[in-house]
Length: 275
Image 1 (cartoon, helix red, strand yellow):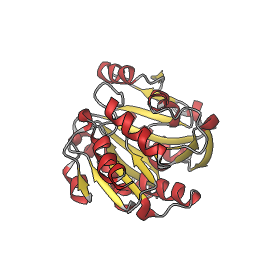
Image 2 (image 1 turned 60 degrees about the vertical axis):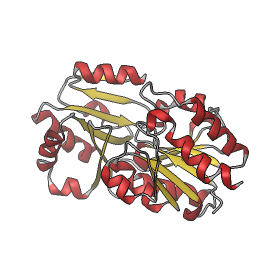
Image 3 (image 1 turned 120 degrees about the horizontal axis):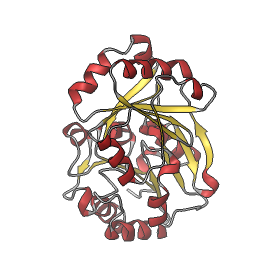
C-alpha cells in the first residue's frame, strides 16, 4: 500500500518528554515529505499552540500543509493559519460543564479558537503549562459571562486521578453528555467537544478535501482520544507507551515509545522502505 498522508498525535506520541520532535523523527518526516507524503499533526491542542513543533518540522507557514486541532474541531492550513473547517460548542453547554467544575473546585481550561482560559489553576498545572510553552489566561471568578460572545471550541477538566474525573463525569446532566464528545488525554485531562467531533472525523474531513482515501492514511497515537483516527485510517498505529485500549485497536504497535522516535519507526517501516 502506498500511503499518502500520516496523521500523528503530538503529546506522548510525536513529542518526547522535552516536548520536542526527535532528530530521527524530523529526518524521517522530511524524507517522507520529499516523497510527496503529507504529514498532519492531529492534536487536542489548539492550532496556535504548536508553533514550535511546526518549526521543527519545517511546516511553518507552509501552503498545502495542515493541522487538525481541538480533537478534530478545527482544520487549518499552515499558511496564515487559515481555518478551513471548524465546529464550535454553544455557550450554554460549556457554561453547564463549567458550573459542575466550579461546584467541585476543579481546575478547568476553556478554549476559544485562539486562546486558553484556565480556572482555579494549581501550581502543578501552572508548571505543566509553562513547560509546554503555552500562553494562557488565568481567571478565578466563577462566571463565564466574559466569554459569552467568543467562539468556544473545547473545554476540559484537569485531575491526575481518573476516579476524580469519573466523579465529575457522573455529575454532568445527561442532555449535556448527549450533546458532547468526551475523551481523555495526557493522563490528566477529561476533554469535551461538540457531539460527533473527534480526531477521526477531522481526519476524514481533511482527507476528503485532499482527495485521499482512508486506506491511504496512517494514523499514530497513544491515548483514547486517538482511537477514532486509529480506527478510520488504513493503518492505525499505537506507540509502545499507548494505553491498552489503543494497542488493542491498532493494526501495528511500535517497538519504540515516544521518547525513542516511535513515529520515525512507523515512517521507515511503512513508507520509506516501500518507495
